[in-house]
Length: 204
Image 1 (cartoon, one colour):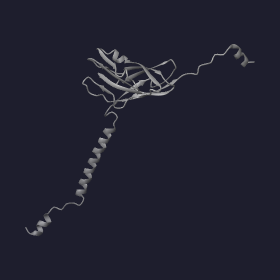
Image 2 (spheres, one colour):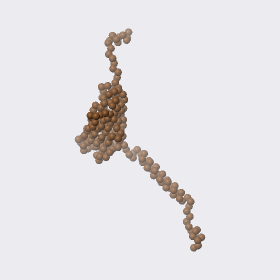
Image 3 (cartoon, one colour):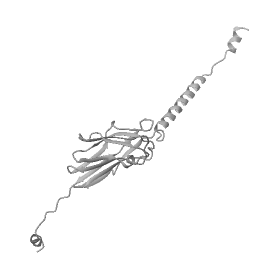
Image 4 (cartoon, helix red, strand yellow):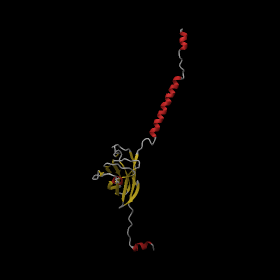
């Protein structure tokens, strides 16, 4: 076999072969990225439960009390215990009573609840609660709050960021968000008493 035959038998690569393989690889990578992006934004991929205040909006007057329930949703089915800190507008609201909610009070085992900063409230309410041997299942009230008004205005109630935790029976953290309440404390202007003769003068 001469040199000419060797050269003619040498395989010749197609100029489109390498780019073809490159395009296929890029398409595969693009597909994987699109799939991962779809999973990351799928709302069902990772659920975050929400604590809510009921009512979340209300108006109350002088000498009235504002009662607020801290609620867990039906999606929380294994709540063994919690530590929560609620911050409120102390210029408008004054906490009068903080106790275990009906869901915790009626749990099918002994329970524990404590208002941690009872003697130094400031602008927050810190609580601990737990079922001692069994779990709570939503929906229901886990904390019961009672406020009175301090100075007329619109005050807020919310969870202090980074200061709360919910735990299940395995002592694992339950991810959650927290709603916010807005409450209008308003006192009506008292009606001044007037003698009968002064009222009669107005209608002469």
